[in-house]
Length: 427
Image (cartoon, rainbow, N blue to C red; front, side, top):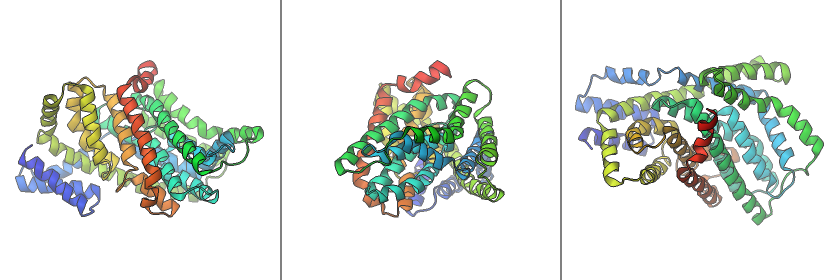
């Protein structure tokens, strides 16, 4: 590794240690590198920052964020929770199962882990606390289940990965379905086991009439994933156009079907969308600049050579990369990590014949684990904030949930057909 690369990474590490926001840390490290090594005019920093955002596909991010906000304002979140509660009934650990199922269903609308945690956690965490569920367990469960939004389409993280690596977003969406379901199932198993151990109950007894009514009421929400995935699968529109269609659909449903979407709510949704999108795109632009310098320093080539000399097994390479990412994911935001890491490791991925779609899903599952791992785990922090508890209270139940998620990651790594079956069959 060259002196320039070491300086770049070192300065960035210092900014993280002194709690500088990730986006600003990336920019500071990049500009400092340009000034110290006189590698290029500082104007290049602005050019590369803008270049990192110059993608039609990235337009899907603010559009999906707005669609999720509109659906939440229209009351689709409450209807999803009601449907899940009607399906589960009063089985032991029923409310925990409802929380996981609701997070997975809302994930198919929002594409954002934090948005999922906030929307479902605001409804489920107070209810679970009233029913005697441990607050630490509940927050850990909602945080981990909310992370399924980074895998289940329309995942914003998958959109970023597809854009950076020039991988089909449609195939990534199809590939994320089975892993997302497996992740949710693993969390349900842990939740039921812990709930039975502690005697935590379910909700109301199963009622066929309530199930029928809640299903009809939530049907418009259930049609959103069909609209997005079906439209992309059959070539009706791209991921960005699918996001636009989801906005139109949410406006029509909220204004004319549920009649719960007002101009005031619409204005608030637009403001929230602008704030969330700006923060995401700021990180993307800064990380693109940082990644450009890493590539200029030939770090991807050096890494590929190191991995080839270290092992000749593609599974050995995957295990090594996943281990490093698990560590990095504990203190870095997912989107920034993808933009920095993906261009660096892709030469090695191609050298060992690893499908970029398969690797992308493994990467995103890895980052979903990191989003719930202290000290930075953003999804876990959001759940703790909503639940009004400290992160340390979640550590014991969280360990079992992270273990379940790691088991799914290993399964997907060594059985790639679980990831590739759908994109190879129908995409």
